[in-house]
Amino acid sequence: MNERVTAKTETNLRTVTSSKDDATIVHLLKNGEFAVRTGINKASGWSSLEYNGKTVYAITSYLLTEAEFNAASSEQTSTEN
Image (cartoon, rainbow, N blue to C red; front, side, top):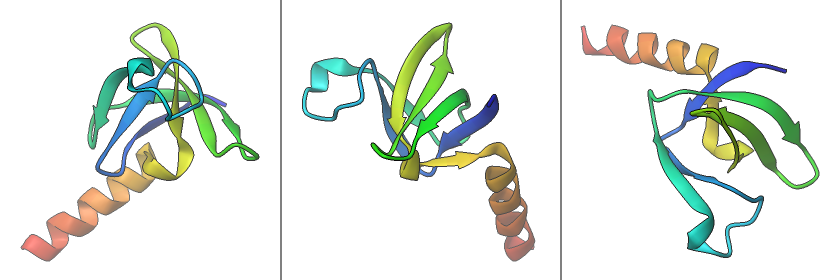
C-alpha cells in the first residue's frame, strides 16, 4: 500500500500509535497537505504514514485518500459556481 492521504481537517502525526502523550506529536497535518500511507491497522484504527522521510502514525478515520480529497474539492468548486 502506497497511497497519498491528507487530513479531513487536521490531524496529529505521531511517533507512536497512542494519543496519550502530546510529546509524541511530530507534525500537524492539515487538509491539502499530503503524506504516503504505508499501512492500516484495522484493529487499532491507526494508519502508518511516510512523512518527510520518517514513519509516523495517524488515526485512520481522520484521513482522506487523495481521490476522496479531489472529489470533495471538485464538489466544493461546483457548488461555489
